[in-house]
Amino acid sequence: MDLGSVPAAPGSNVALRADGAATAPAVPEVFDEMTHRRSPKPPKMTDVAELAGVSQTTVSFVINNVTSAGIAEETRLRVWAAVRQLGYRTNAAAKVLRTNRSHVIGFITDEVASTPFAGDIIKGAQDVAWLNKRLLMILNTNSKSEVEESAIEMMLEQRVGGFIYAAMCHQEVNPPPSLREIPAVLLNCYCRDRSLPSVVPDEVTGGRRATELLIGKGHRRIGFINILPYLPPARGRLEGYKHALSEHGIAYDPALVFHGNSFADSGYASTKELMLLPDRPTALFCGTDRVAMGAYEALSELGLAIPRDVAVIGFDNQELVAAYLRPSLSTMAMPYYEMGQWAVRYLIDMFEHDDPVSPIQQMLDTPLIERESA
Image (cartoon, rainbow, N blue to C red; front, side, top):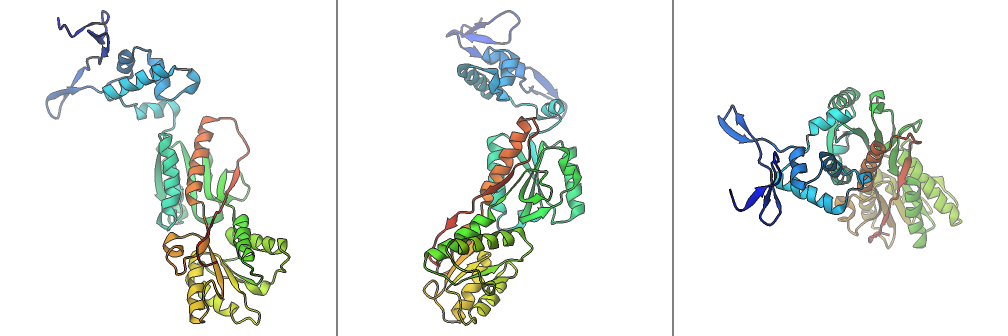
């Protein structure tokens, strides 16, 4: 007999070394028809249980992080040590059969994956998913309804655990009925009847803070170059703009408010018109950073210096625009990373709590990034 170990018990695969510590059970071999060699069979949960000296139920509780089971910390550490020593992996397919759902989250987007904001939204979602041992399956539909419906059906066939339905810009959406078959969260969008949980930026507060920054610098004539008026962000930011003016005793002047697209050409044209007013504005609140970029160009052509002659603030904090304009652009940051985090966190909470609750309509803060332009 090998003096380094002695049998633990008749019929057991676990051996005890001379110092009393357990060694890994012998792993049976299987014959590989392709290589004509015998290869080790993947370890089972029963092997982990034997090595750790606990029941298979205890191993299951530890691996699946069942905190209500009251497993002692020393036991949990012993189980995880056995898992690492044996190289044990849970059978994901078997888990799907038991729960009828996988640990994969379906992430459906219209154009998010191809926008400048995609990295932050997806990173926020992935970070929380990874911490909770879940994966994202991301599909970009290019705003095509037939692609969207097919993508959702395909993900349902793959037994995804739930859906995140993300939009490129804050907007009202009408997702396919199939999205409601399993838990789902709307990201950067909402449905009219508010029947699905959603997370969006707090546009009203963002518009108010941007305007208050300019008022705090002494400006009373503040031009607002907004985006398209029917969009929720445009309505919310205009409401915030008006609220800030009212709070500081400044009359709202519709002649100072322009609407256009989200791009530099709109900022350029609107700024040129605003600066022709007899009582021109001394500050500009721009609906996006790209709009602000167009305003910069127009002010430069007019020989007006920023912020000496006209202060400028943007909205959305596009790093490649805001940080590299000269002077660097003060702006309101959109909480894309935080929205991605919130959506996954709330979805996982839905998995773990079966009790129906009213869907939350969450708004997240848009913080001020103060630089040199205001």
